[in-house]
Image (cartoon, rainbow, N blue to C red; front, side):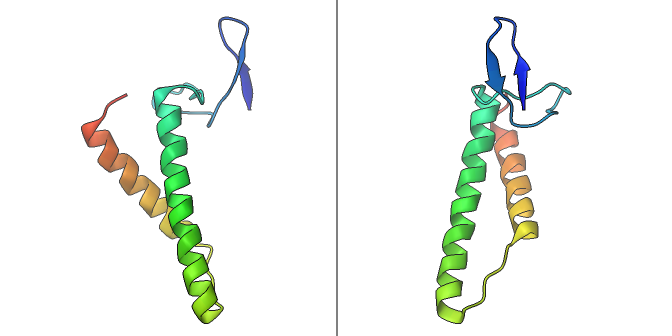
Length: 83
């Protein structure tokens, strides 16, 4: 989704709602953190599926595991770094 910023430029937003009900622009520190953690978790699950898929022929989407990993990462990072 896109929204108009004050300067008339458009920024890509990651989600409709953030902590205070405001959209999170991609170029903000919180947006970069969200994308970075998502890429790290996605890469980990991709290699996990490749490893087990080549060994056994069975893969899993791991949606619940991804959500739990993401939630725990954000909680852990939130304790040490406030944006």
